[in-house]
Amino acid sequence: MSDLRALLALAAPQRALLALGTVLMLLESAAALLVPWAGGLLTEAMLRSAEPTPGGAAAAGVGVVLAGMLGLFALQALLKFGNTYILENAADRIVSDLKIRLYDHLQALPLTYYHERRLGDTLALLTNDVYVLSGFMSGTALALVPLLFTASGAVMLMFGIRPALALSAVILIPVFYLLTKVVGRRIRPLAAQLQEEYATAIAIAQENLSMLPAIKTFTREAQESARYREQIGRVFQLNVRQRRIYAALEPASQLIAAAGIVLVLALASSDLGEGRLLPSQLVSFLLYAALLTRPVAGLADVYGRTQMARGAFARLQQAMEEPPEAAGHAGIALAAVRGEIEFRAVHFGYGGGRPPALEQLDLHIAAGETIAIVGPNGAGKSTLGHLLLRLHLPSAGQILIDGVDIAGVSLASLRRQIGVVPQHVLLFNASVRDNIAYGRPDPSQAEIESAAVAARAHDFITALPQGYDTLIGDRGVKLSGGQQQRLSLARALLKDPAILILDEATAMFDPAGEAEFLHACRDALRRRTVLLITHRPASLAVADRVVRLDQGRII
Image 1 (tube, rainbow, N blue to C red):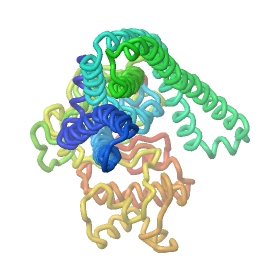
Image 2 (tube, one colour):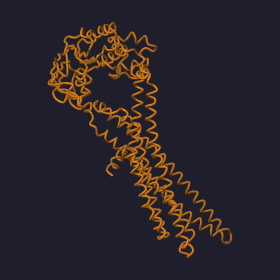
Image 3 (tube, helix red, strand yellow):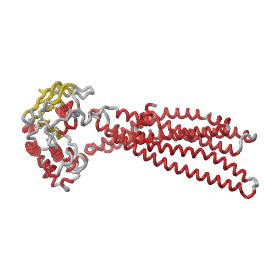
Image 4 (cartoon, rainbow, N blue to C red):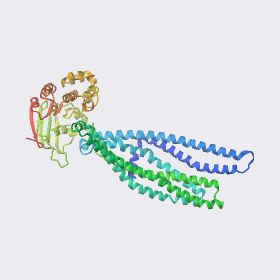
């Protein structure tokens, strides 16, 4: 029940809509409870009409009852329309709220969270689980109230007509309960397995689409297609098993209900013959018994869907309980800096049984100094930049900028001071202008062009079909590697950061392009503190000092 309360708390922002929808469902249930009573009145009126009466009064009575029943059905239809429209509206709002809340939390999580999980699991939360939860909160959970109202109302009215017959009908309810328990035990693990296989399918599709050049290069299309087809087959088979259970649930419920009605008819025949039960009462009683089967069978469906929602909620809760990074503005604001950097006895490891990336590292970088950091792969070069940006946190030691420990400053003010040109350039499927302007709100066109000129990117940009308005595709796929690096540098320079990290920034260049890029950098790097992470000897020409790392230590 605690899980259910926590789950319903997610729908709290839409409680007004949900409450209105629930009221309409209750009114619809009340109207449904009037139908068997009206059926009894109609039977009584019809029996009277069969008797000779002057002036056609009995026939008029039948007409009135029929008109009343038609109005009752119209009222039910109107209430059904109202609650369906309102609850589906609430469901859409809940989905939107959940997606935004989940996305904001996922975005705030540290990068280590994603290093330890498949991206498909995260995407499945946003694409599948939120819909399962929304449907449960706006439909299944709220439907429980009118179902219980209808069931209890039908039972009370049946007892009011003939208690002995009502007892024979109600005694079948435990059979329904046992049926739901059996079904529930099968649905919950099946739902968890289905989610796991669904997440795997998303992960395969996402990975393969991002690796499409490699797949085509190595002519692995058939193998990858077969792998994805096999995974979708697993999802399909689990869906078939789940639908088979639900498909069997309704006929089983109907069979039990039909057996109950037959039992009632058998018992009622003697009551009817001995005058203890009027024909009109029998009709009303049978209609109430039939009405009772709907909520009782519905309760079985509610039980099954509750198990599915619990699984989805457990996955959502697990993600939401992951501790995020500090809020962007939590901590003291770091004022404009000169760019002096100091690593004091810094220790950091990525976990998973791997050796430490940095061990007791001490490094001082003067303001305005360009320092080249070299060393073999895995030496900890890129880790320095990640720690400086607080993308990771050191397990020991301090990192200071202008003498201020960055552990106590706000992330927003820290990251505003630092520009990054990564080895694997991260560009958006947007225009050249939008990509350059990404790190600075509302820059002018002149400022964008100035940054492009400083990065030696302006000439090739103006040669593009739409110039600065040219769309560059996912991750800048329509540009060459060197052009992507220049855009990345222009984006970093537009921030005008005091500290600039160039992480293998020339990796995509040929020697001539590298020379030109470094020439551009000489002007761009003036008056900045630069961490030049590189394997390329030519890049060392722009450095004031070279630091070599190996196994997390300066050697």
